[in-house]
Image (tube, rainbow, N blue to C red; front, side, top):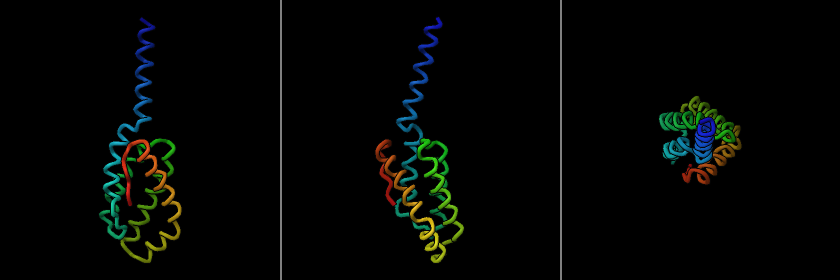
Length: 122
């Protein structure tokens, strides 16, 4: 009986690991984010809100190696919202955070494509 319980536990744990590796809910949620960032205009605070909402969901279920990248995206969204569509403030944000957000977005997009088969444009 103990052998059976150990076998069931091992199979259950293996299934959990496989789900985490294949993306699980994270991958299914990525499509919503991909739509939110497609042709995103950072001057449009409603569009930034939508993108930020999707990013918050994903940051909670993201693989550990992307947690910092999602934090960068969320920090950028906060700053973009604070700019309230002001072109000068958004240009300054692009100068100060452009490299960080580009690297984070690239890492997220690469993992999305490689693991989840989701293309993120924008």
